[in-house]
Amino acid sequence: MKDTNEEEEQEDIKNNKEEKEKKEEKEKKDEPKVEEKKEKEKENEKTNEEPPKKEEKFPPEPKEPEPKIPTDFTKILKESLEYKKQGNELINSNLDEAIEKYDSAIKLLEPNISKANKQKEYNPQSQEIITTYKQIMSNLSLCYFKKEDYLKSKEIDIKIISIDPNYDKCYVRLFNSFLKLDQPEQAVYFGNNLLKKFTPETLEKYKDIIPKIEEETKKLQDKYNEIKRKERNEFLKSLAKWLIPLIVLIAAGLCYYFFVYLKKHPEGLFGNFDNNGTNVTNKTEKLNFTLEDDPDKN
Image (cartoon, rainbow, N blue to C red; front, side, top):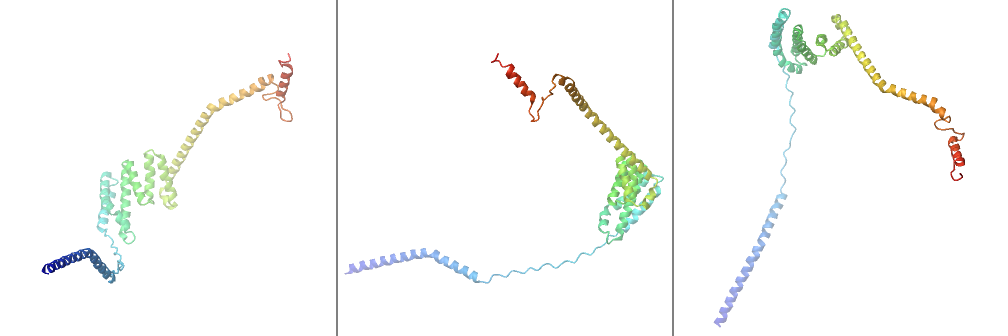
């Protein structure tokens, strides 16, 4: 009996062990599923939570425009006008020294021209800066013109016109400079611009030079007309080289036809035609051939 009991106990122990092992295996298998459930629960909790509120962005407050503070050109104007005065005193006695004075004034003014252009509307000194700059540049151009450096003179005048297209003195000087440089086309261009752009009151100052502009314009027009006439003559000559032989050849052919060929062939080049438009000459030739020159009947 004891043996049987022991055996039963051992079997129970075995069975319990097996059941435990099975449970452990099941738990191991179920572990990832449990973790997944937990994760899903956490996600659901997150979704149920209220979303964070976005911070409202307000448009930036409009900035007040910066006050326009005019540049103080007083010191620059004073110094440049002093240089200009000294240059004007020297222009008739010493051109080189006058050029030095004007150059010194321009070095003061030139860096401030762009700034002065921007402040024209609200800074009265700006216009004074620009006007002084143009006057000194014009005087400098005059100095180079008197020194017979016409290239330098015209460069300065063109620069002045780029700033102020209505600076009349520059057009007069450019007309004379280009004439001295033997460039009549450009001289006439600026001379005619002077006559077109400015009023009779302004042109009254230049009444001595206006006849010269008209004279140079006429010379240039005559020169162009002469060039066109020569080109036309050259064209006619080249045309005559092949046109005259062609006319002679055609005339010779017509003479031969009327005076030689028609005597031998009175029916003409294409023969005689009846009222129906058929060639009679060809018919008679065929008939003559079939009746008289048929080799089978001979």
